[in-house]
Amino acid sequence: MKTLRVWFFLAAMTLFLLGFIFPEAGLCKAHAQLAIAIENYAGDGSRYHEILIASPVDNQTHPVVIYIHGGCWAYTFDDWTTKAFNAIHAATHGFVGVSINYSLTRHGKTNPQDPRWKYWPDQLDDAKHAVGWLKNHAGKYGIDPGKIYTIGHSAGGHIALMLALTNSDIQNPNYRYDSSGDIQGACTVAGASDLFRIYYESIFPIDNLPSVVNDLLDNPLMHVTDNCDNCSGTNSFCYLNRCRTNPDGEIALASPIYNLPQDTSGLVPIFMVSGMWDEISPKKGQHTPFYSLLSPDKKKELTYPCGHDFGFWWDDIDHKAYDFFSSH
Image (cartoon, rainbow, N blue to C red; front, top):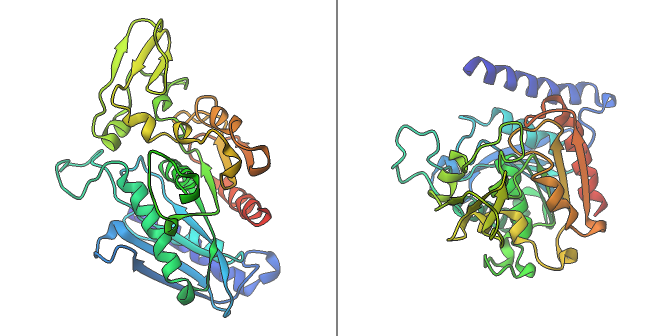
């Protein structure tokens, strides 16, 4: 694993330097000099509240792209190698590139009772805090505080959607945040929009919530009955003629699709990216229902020939996301 990180770092730095040596190749189109800093947006010294900022050095203000990493809400890279590449890529295309850490869950940990591990909505709280921190430090990093966008993959894509759905002007009754954490657009890459349906309707159908969701929501109560005769409402889900019900509503509360306002025209623009063979967040059960409810003039959808990990398609996704944000 350590060798893999070294290769990621070497690849990232090679592309970065090639942009300076061969600018006509388009690898570093916008700026020849960047400042890179790692800060702590909560001021508590925790690595889970670190933020990396890559900003063009040109005495101008720029829109921001915040990358939110995936990993089942439970994992992150031990260092900034890969996440630095994402931020640097955005900074070389006219943005201030940012990558954030956030509180992780107990999933897969050898010490699951450790108080460091958190439950939803701490992950959303952290992302909101990071956005507010960037606005408060806009002058230092050349940030346009009115143009802050997010790109998230998998668990990070879920958080990116929830950021968009909890802007202060939406007046979401489930969440009350002030405007400091508001964003202007979101791109979700294989992010879950319905936590009831993770793995359901996929090539690996299962009968209960996967453990990653249980650990995110602290084991929400689930009732499973043998028919769907009375299976209705936002807290129930019928699949294979069996009704799954979460009577306390934690699953719907954390699911973007159940946080959509009746009138979606007031939402910020949302770009949804899915993988054709995604076995974790299948397009049919995740992106398609959510996307159909969005305002036509504020949405974009693309599907790539891949699974849950997008590999070399990321460069194309990034560029299309940059164009989407710039055009809105």
